[in-house]
Length: 325
Image (cartoon, rainbow, N blue to C red; front, top):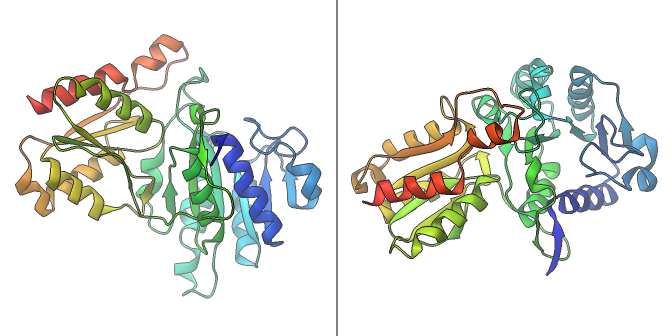
């Protein structure tokens, strides 16, 4: 297989789908000649022109609102929000319009809308450009939430999102854009709601997603010499979530550590913990369910402070050791 970056994989998915289906349009700030804030759409304007790759005004309300309307009348829009933090400006369009339109109209309308947006910290972009807000949207019925961790998954899941007849929020952690990985040739999709086991283990299962997958794998490797075999489960899809894989892995290993970059309180990790606690896996646990998550703090601008509020490899490794003692 070829080895390409996460950003290139997303661009490939978008480009291939737009060649396949003329109803797909791409909307966002600076996505045209400039190629997007993170360079994801470079070259797309030259191929598809300004009618299908449309630069928009600096108005997230207008961008998402236009996408909702276009989806309801037959197009398949992909909109890019420059930073996921800016979804707060378009919250009504996302949670009250996109997520509810099909339900409101008894299925008479479909809303095949994809909202792509860079998420998370690590670039020194400070508190209004570095948040991980996935729990806001996982809490909203009617919208699917996807957080791929590898280039191959980014491409396959984005193709699935574009072909879906319902709104999908597609979260791309900024530090993953330059990460390279093997990506299959040809057309392929990855179904929503199916987690991927990135590392088999027997002593503890680490449940995670996005950029924390790589850190969990490194942490698991670091404790292997101590006789601890950690399993790493990459959710990939947060809504729908692969509850069967979560329960199966928890039953198998008997210990659960949930790792995510977002704030601890009210995060997706709390829902994962509830899934385990409400299932038969609870009776197989040898230790309490534990979360290793971001601090309940705005994201600092200072790089050292910024890194200190998200789980690092040593912190994850220490949490593994603590649960396995």
